[in-house]
Image (cartoon, rainbow over all chains, first blue to last red; front, side):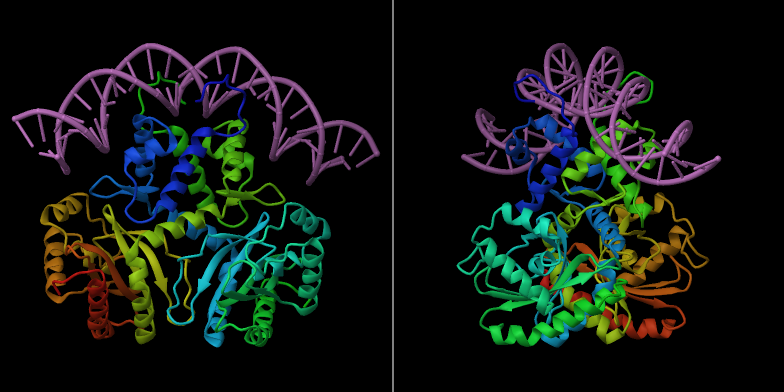
Amino acid sequence: MSGALANQLKTSTTVAKAFAILDFLASSGEGGSSLATISSQFGISKSTAHRYMTTLEELAVVERDAKDHFRLGVKLIELAAAFLSDHSLRNVADPFLHELAIRTQETVHLAIPFGDEVVYIAKVESSHALGLTSRIGARVPMYCTALGKAILAHYPAERIEEIIRAGLPARTLHTITSPEGLLRELEQVRAQGYAIDDQENELGVRCVGAPIFDYIGKAVGAISVSGPANRMTLERSLELAPWVRDTALAVSKRMGCRRL
Amino acid sequence: MSGALANQLKTSTTVAKAFAILDFLASSGEGGSSLATISSQFGISKSTAHRYMTTLEELAVVERDAKDHFRLGVKLIELAAAFLSDHSLRNVADPFLHELAIRTQETVHLAIPFGDEVVYIAKVESSHALGLTSRIGARVPMYCTALGKAILAHYPAERIEEIIRAGLPARTLHTITSPEGLLRELEQVRAQGYAIDDQENELGVRCVGAPIFDYIGKAVGAISVSGPANRMTLERSLELAPWVRDTALAVSKRMGCRRL
DNA sequence: GTGCTTTGTACTATAATTTAGAATGAAATT
DNA sequence: AATTTCATTCTAAATTATAGTACAAAGCAC
């Protein structure tokens, strides 16, 4: 596409572009994007953008309103639902998440590891009990979140080393940025069975997380309770910690984990 | 791809193939699919399938397990979450759905129109309160479901005619298959403010649905309560109907509809 | 353990699709 | 009423996608 002589590409540029467009639509939020916007955003001609969008529209991956503004389409719901039903963790955990939300009266999250990060795949709010909103699908680092540390603590030492080598940038004043500090923290997480994120990822937010193990004893996810720091004090975090841990253990048991 | 001389295609075959693969992965369910399976399923060479899958894997649209089996990936959750947050209807309706589920002790659905069908975009079960599972993302016809009829009744006459012309195949013994019968039914739906599906789409399942209108008075979705026919008798359906209707009206009001 | 099949991956020439740009018509703005 | 903006269509040129072959590794049969 650019100038240079084409050297072999191992991946499909066309498919990659299609998903780049979808990513853009996902981030552009309300209102949708016009063809001209997409065209200029990616530096492709209007005719090319048009071909992409009509294709995606035909597949119901995007939809356009009366003003020819494009938005994400219902096909994505279908695919996401298939993803979640395939991930038995989500289904197994769901009732436990609700119970925990009711008991703690705080927001409960379920996440799975993905590379050096974790991905939220479920969320339950105590009062309104919203399903798929806000953070679902979002990724956050492992080293500075309760969910992440809960999982990371049960990774093999070499994986932990890898993640440390990838860097521990300070996200807030409270982020643990030294390798030694993190290793000590993870040691404590293993001993306690839960992890506490004291505003390490976001100022004003405290979380308590605990890992979920599958039948082979591998950490395949984590549950967390989080809330604003003024309500979720450190003392309250410590009070809730056993509940979170026990809920995660109950889910682990359902996942076939026998070594509790 | 086949033999014949290529005549201009208006859509991107590459993108379409990528989503065909995703559809296949979605339907293949547990266990995932190997590269060889995908290759033979679509009649493409292994090298081509390989290129598609590595591309999709790099984008996190699919993921592969230790045995090189491909499944849908977390990127789809991210995109679906963006879709839902963009569809304000879902967010507005959510608390109402839960309230209705508690009051009726039955399963509650939220759906939006899509072509001649409706797509489920939210579900609340009274007892377990599952989120994204089973029917989310699924599409059902308009003419034989409570959700569909609730919306269809408020469509312009010509759209209704179109849908009738598309055919009213019998899905069960109770399906309304005559144009006159459907028009009469829709008239009644408009008068009552709710629609009842008496096992028209699936034997043994009754539903009560009511339409949601936006600020312009357009039917943009519907809410339903459904249950097994033995528990959800016709009398019970009629009892619940006003609740469903009032819930839908409350959501409509929140969506800016002023003509209630 | 050995030989066999099957798997995912890499490479290359051919063939096909994708691409940009100009041209068109419709709609909204001035 | 004139002008700009927009989505859409068309065509030749160029990039990308394709199938086939080849390879290494894993699994299976014997």
